[in-house]
Image 1 (cartoon, helix red, strand yellow):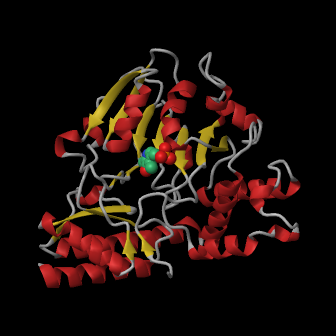
Image 2 (tube, helix red, strand yellow):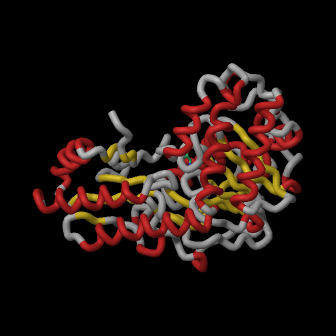
Image 3 (cartoon, helix red, strand yellow):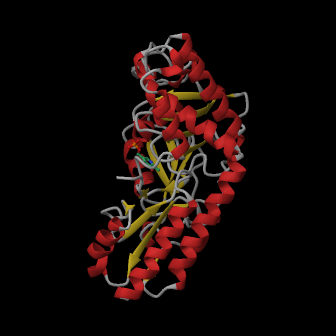
Length: 360
Ligand SMILES: *Cc1c(COP(=O)(O)O)cnc(C)c1O
């Protein structure tokens, strides 16, 4: 079977040139007679890959020198615990914004370690918008402010970076990192699982301001302490070498594309044409407030939910895969990360028009 247009929310599509490079590198990498999966993480070959990946990631996001970049495991879900364990003391108040399934999970995990103050919540309208900043009820003594920049399931993306008013701003960027430039200096901690917009599952990227390191709670396992990774160049134990190597290839691919300004331009164009097609039809709809719509995850429902199964079978037959919406939302979801070619979005729109003509 040839490559399809894969709209999976994660693990998600990897750019074709990266796939080709992986294929070329297996099983004899750099002429050393072994693949990258089979050499020591402390070998000079792997360390060169690891260092280059970090340099390229720093360059893409223009990460200031006072920030550490860490290559971890455990997914964004483990960060739901690592953030409070590293950045707050026992019983301390922490501020969280709830805009969907992922921030809700982050809140539930933080409640094990902190007193969580939910400063704003969009559950009243089924997580279809970002509450206006002026309505947030911040506590005066929080250790940090946490939000999820892009809710992968609901397709809600913050169109702004919140004001943190002197406390560290903590952000789950799993499904939006590298989709556009960000001002890292506004943040205390950024984390992202790799399997959406970076590379294979198994790797989690963390960007943390160095002055926040070294305050982990007593009794915390070493491997949940950011400082331990910082001091060991993320090699305190064996890192996910293959995922790290592929992430490095993805960073190189993005640099060749022209960096995040170019990526943002393409992403915005892809998203806007898909939303325009949805909005122009009576048959498809997207429930998210227009200004808060995600560039990365586009949920939509059919007017007649009885046609869902048919839409999925016929789109699959047209080589458009993984369009089924999350079970909590229903309908469809097209994840259109960096690696989804614009031609994939065009093909989806054309398919949607045809399906509406036949069944609408
Ligand atoms: C996928 C996702 C997660 C969970 O990631 P894991 O790697 O499975 O732990 C958390 N937050 C967001 C925004 C996500 O998209």
